[in-house]
Amino acid sequence: MKVTRKEFKGFAAVVFCIASWMLAGAAIAQAWPAKAIEVIVPFPPGAVDTRVRIVSDKVSKILGKPLVIQNRPGAGFRIGTDALLRAPKDGYTIGVLAQANGAITPALDPNAGYDVRKDLTLLTLVYETPLVFVVHPSLGVNTITDFIKLAKKQPGKLNYGAAAGASAYRLWFEVFMTLAGIDLQHIPYKGTAPALLDLAGGRTQAALGDAGVKPFVEVGKMVVLATTGSQRSPMFPNAPTIQESGVPFVANTWLGFAAPSNLPREVNQRLVEAFAEAVRSPDVRAAIEAGGGDVLLGLGPAAFQVRVDEEIQKFRRIGAQLNIKIE
Image 1: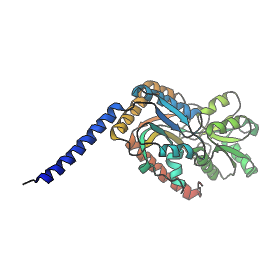
Image 2: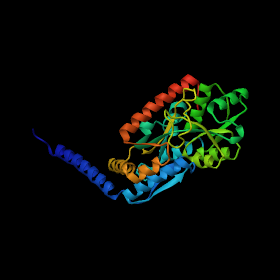
Image 3: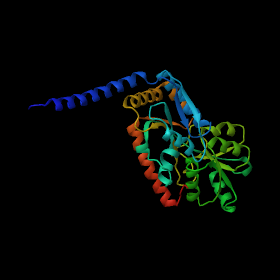
């Protein structure tokens, strides 16, 4: 086949572009990270934030650059999530993807404005954990059964604290109320930590919490009525599950890390490898599992995506069945 000079020049130009792209990719891989990496956390400091820092500190050591935590709570996790979505696609901004902003908002909020599969790069799903149902001691109840009886005697009079918007704790409390046939007022907060502080101070009456409830329980400022897993939590082994108490309710929440979409391939790969190594490390595993109820997952991007897809479908079904919407 005869090739003209013009055709040859065109072919050479294509080869040059491909070679340049490959060299640029190699340069990015060698140079990155050249500075600190910002980690956007869409909720205030608390027990969950502590686990984020445990993993981030290990990743920082692996990559040789600091991971700087930026707490950006508020607006039902929208402030932090929007900041992550708008961040440059260079690997220097990553963020926390939890059940709330990773599955509940995309499933139940028609104005969410993002698609996890298209707009984010999933890095790792770190852990899942059951929730803890706690009340203020002034209610005078010690079991879920007693709590339900009290709530039915005072419909709409009792309250519970949870983050506003697409909080997993709020959604699961709403599901619990529907299954138990009770009605409580929702008191909105920027996150779980401030909600628990107000519960401990007697300004609210009930909440679903996490490992952060333990110090308050130990000093008598909260009473654990039950946990939400399918089995009893090692953190509170004497507390029955809600399912044991007669309400067909099982709930777990989870946490992972993500980045903006369309990262350079080499940067994406290094982030995924660094997080995988961090989660596999014995010290990180021990620190996270010390929370008592946490189950370390350490799932990579593909398995993480499957989990997110499944949960979005699950919450769509829950929303339709129980007429739950987020606005």
